[in-house]
Image 1: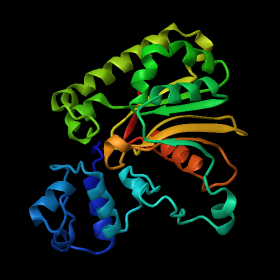
Image 2 (image 1 turned 120 degrees about the vertical axis):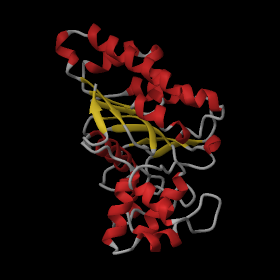
Image 3 (image 1 turned 60 degrees about the horizontal axis):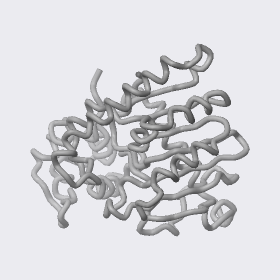
Image 4 (image 1 turned 180 degrees about the horizontal axis):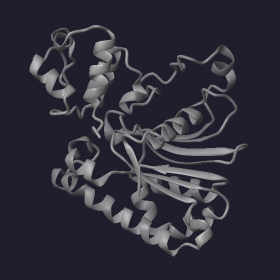
Length: 281
């Protein structure tokens, strides 16, 4: 089976617009500014030989090729223009709650892990967790995870270590190049701990702990829960530039289909249900 890469989506978008590779090469955004690349480069990207690691380049390509951002694993929420409304939202949803249920917004690293853990402690119903927060949770939160399995399912999305080993350059939040190249070892260790936790569970709880790896850029690091009536999320936008100032949101579930809560949750499960980029472990 062909492995997914961004080039497949780029080629699909280009062909839908009846644009040639030459025409796209002329419009192709450069990471340092300006436009224009060789036709060979476009061809290599579309065939998966060369990869794009800069999220801003991907965003610009989405605009040029009229590709929905979610197809590239990018957030519809624009941190540079937070007042932008969801393109499908009506006036009732737009006016429902201006702060979208946000109770905390910070770019400080202080209390970062505590914010995620507090959300997990408060969780009711089903939980969904992704990103590097998984590494910290597997270190000292196994008792919390086990307790939550008594009341609902836990969906865990963790980066595919083989994929991240090949694409370590996308880990721009890690400054040290050597650590970036070795980061996949931490992910493998987290998966090992999760498997140990699953083996230790009572038989009736094992099926509630659902674990998948994913092989793409996911726009959020997230810990959240939803019991149907109430819900809460703590998440960061991973494609935010600069990485050191990534906003971290804590927000509650509100009524409506186009809230920020629903956007993040739906994005999580769109990755979960996409079998071309996620697999069970």
